[in-house]
Length: 149
Image (cartoon, rainbow, N blue to C red; front, side, top):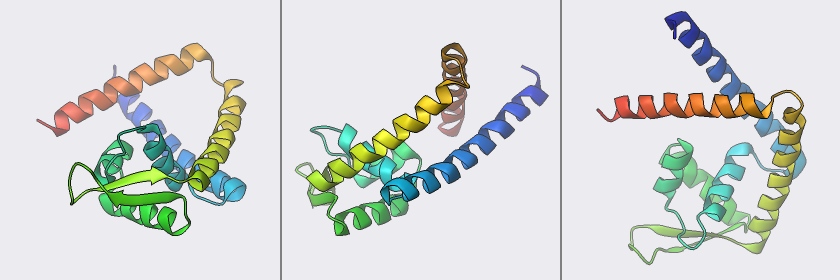
């Protein structure tokens, strides 16, 4: 791949990520009353199933700081969407579980997300989407390898 093509890909990727964050923040806030980051944190907790994740695991998974996750967890707990208890693995860790209200809020958010995804289906073919996913996954793997070397 020519270096100018790679730079253009990365420029568009960066721009798409920023626009996606802004649009998601507006869309979720307007439709369900919480921001995109809050929804991602709740979703990560829900998808963990029987092994509630730690705040550090959520931060790593979402590429957020532990402080950002902590603020989201505190807000969710205050609103009654999340229960925080001592982890059975360690007294220093907290176990996070969605409440019924948190699960209902997440379900609303996922419905909004599916609606948005269906709207993009008319603009991006399945083959193009699959190729983009493969390309971005490879770039992430290369960059992560570089980060850890």
